[in-house]
Length: 193
Image (cartoon, rainbow, N blue to C red):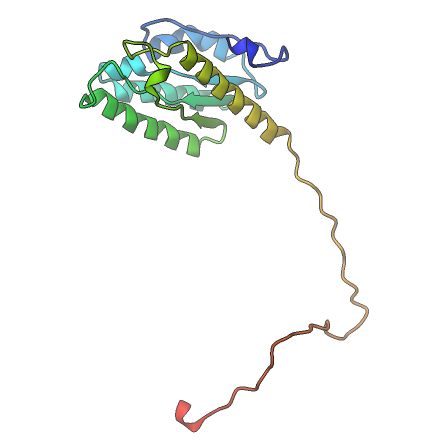
């Protein structure tokens, strides 16, 4: 799906395992991750299964390790989506919201990491509410593509050089500064002190 959104200039490699934890994904992907360089993008979309069994510290530590060890590449952290398969009062969704805030803070202190916050719209999920449906996947891939292109644009945009005009200092007169205000001299009063 993502191949349709990006040009043939990109090579796409993915590591997926349904029902896996962030530790398992990291272990499976580590060899591929180490091949990445500063021109590549690592998109991390993991943690839903860990948060469901209340392992927030473990999943955050795994993602933190991935980001800090991969400072040679561009990291995009995708927020963990809302779980529509659980009641609104469920603590998993509260934990997910707090976890996403932690991820966003992590990207603020890591110059090579960016945070992608996806829309929490029920219409983007399957009937059971855990996974994205076809429209949700297209939306996610589109958001990832936009993020990658915007980051590439930031990297290639160079600052413009502005010429410096050296002022003519041959005259010893101060520059003529015209003003439209009426100037009056301050008056010293004896009651002021």
